[in-house]
Image 1 (cartoon, rainbow, N blue to C red):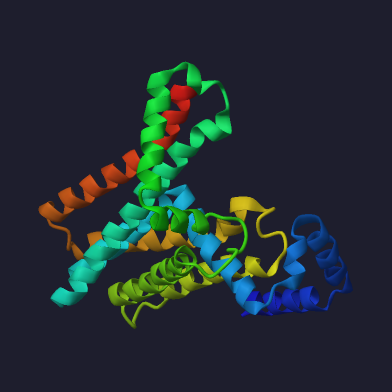
Image 2 (image 1 turned 180 degrees about the vertical axis):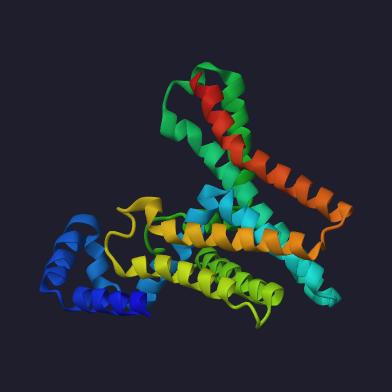
Length: 271
């Protein structure tokens, strides 16, 4: 109760402080001049879609969370149609991470600029990866939009797909958490929602991109907390069989490979 009172007083001070309005004007001019023209829809977009982009850029945390969440929900449901959806969830997140990794690798020569043309083997390898990503332009543009720091120029198929993917990942996560923990344990669901809202709120600040990935810090913490709760629940209920353990291990190993492909590529090129 004491914490709620302190939080309410702090929020009141923030909302009524005249300095905040002046700071908003200064930061908008400095960091995001176009922000002054944005309405509620645009600000919600900035708070939601780049959030998923940050999580995909990280590659590890949300992906592991989503896979464990989907696998845990699989153990809870007996409906075969829902099981198809949960398998789709695992395939979707792995595909997004895999494709994002390919995009990152294809972008390395552009960012490093260290004379890669002197090594035809390296040039050929990067060109091949770049060709793979560009062979599926809708998917390529969609994932790039997820990590784009701004609003799309027009309502295109990739823009709509980016919105749908973002909303689906958040809502499906909420549903699976509720499915696993039930009505008796709403704390994990509330924790996840609060974490997401903490990142969503940054969309109402012109410094959303100037502040970088740290804007998702509290969301990261809540994802870690809910993941640990999931793992604890799995072990406490002793629901994991050997076959499922092996499958989850294989999936997480593949995830680790996706994560470090870009890192290894950078190290190889630089040294």
